[in-house]
Picture 1: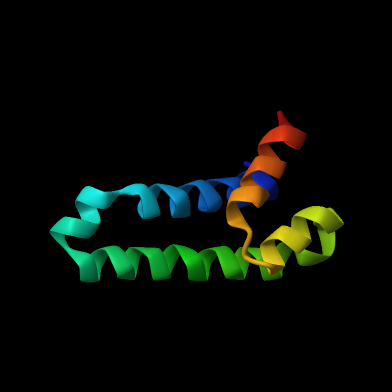
Picture 2 (picture 1 turned 120 degrees about the horizontal axis):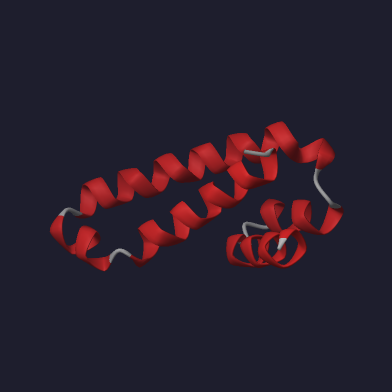
Length: 78
């Protein structure tokens, strides 16, 4: 798994958690905690990779445009 694969996985996991309305409805506190956890992991991964990321991807991550970051990775990595 490359570093960009790890970033892509975290971005997708964050979107999946946000979209999991059944989880949110069943246990709002756990849903929020899962979202906070993946967001922290995503922030740490961004900091770790920042120097080697393409400028546009770095911009999306810095601005918390996570859907755009995922789209960028999907379009540029195949």
